[in-house]
Image (cartoon, rainbow, N blue to C red; front, side, top):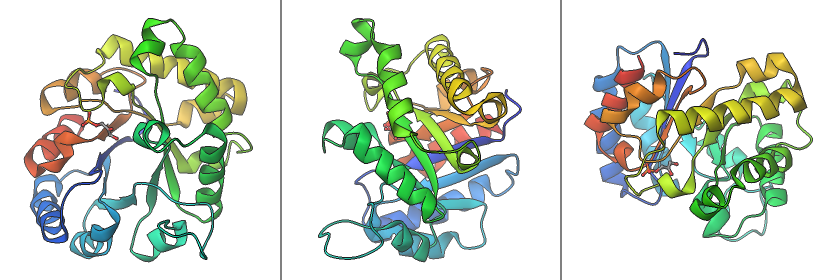
Amino acid sequence: MAARKVFVAGNWKMNKLVAEAVTLAEDLKPLVANVTNVDIAVCPTYTALYAVGKALAGSNIQLGGQDAYVKESGAYTGEISPRMLLDVGCSWTIIGHSERRHILGESDAFLNEKVRFALASDINVMFCIGELLEERKGGTMKDVLERQVVKGLEGLTAADLDRVVVAYEPVWAIGTGETATPDQAEEAHVFVRGLIEKIFGADAAAALRIQYGGSVKPDNAAELIARENIDGFLVGGAALKADSFADIVNACA
Ligand code: 13P
């Protein structure tokens, strides 16, 4: 286990009506209430954020959005601003999830704008990166990760990185049940930390938390978190049930 404080976040994606989301939050609270050595967050869909935020008030579970646009307000139909996320109690937002990169077509340059605007708006960022299966098989995994890190974090300072977590989520492992092995995940995390060191220096690299995401489950969390450079998880499917998410958190505690 690394010296950095472990951070486990649940990405609920486009799931749960408001009442279901509140129930999940209420069920989760007591299951992780005694955990003090792991940062915990959940990222519900927008319509449930306010209600879940109220349900979690005073708990040790932080709230996050799943995306944020690059303007504070205005004529941007369908978008949501960092300020609106802060307004409902979020301290985090995900930026650059692979579903936004590959389904919604968001570019590295646009994601960089989002990261910068979110940080300028005082919300912390979970910045997601990860290669496709064909990129891994074709031997370009490291090029892809390098491009995503260099372009996505362009213009940031080492001090900005205090408010950024990087989530390594190999696309082939998301929602497939096929987890990266601890060796595969550790190799990618070491590579990413090395990139951060080159750009931002050794201190920033040593302090940066790198989450792993992709079919994390209660039964594989312990062996992954045991690796030196894996500092937590961004959990999809297993975050939709209170007991499985709590088991993952507790495996890290
Ligand atoms: P799964 O845990 O469902 O594979 O999803 C991972 C993910 O995309 C988290 O952001």
